Image 1 (cartoon, rainbow, N blue to C red):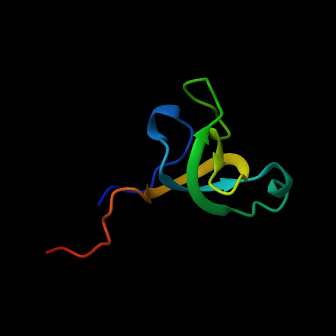
Image 2 (cartoon, rainbow, N blue to C red):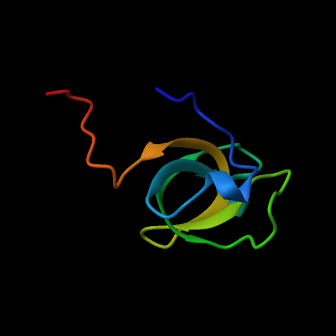
Length: 79
């Protein structure tokens, strides 16, 4: 299993990944929101505060941690 990764590199983030983000209004409290990436909003290759994404459902924030694939179909059970 791959270890958790931070979200500072655009190349590590793709649509369908499950990530934790911090929304702008939650920066003071460091409250994280977990969701699935719908769109990558940052165009640069990296950002020191995390790549900005839009989650399914419309929330926008900077990725603090990459949790894993949502679209892989992997349930954690092996045949």
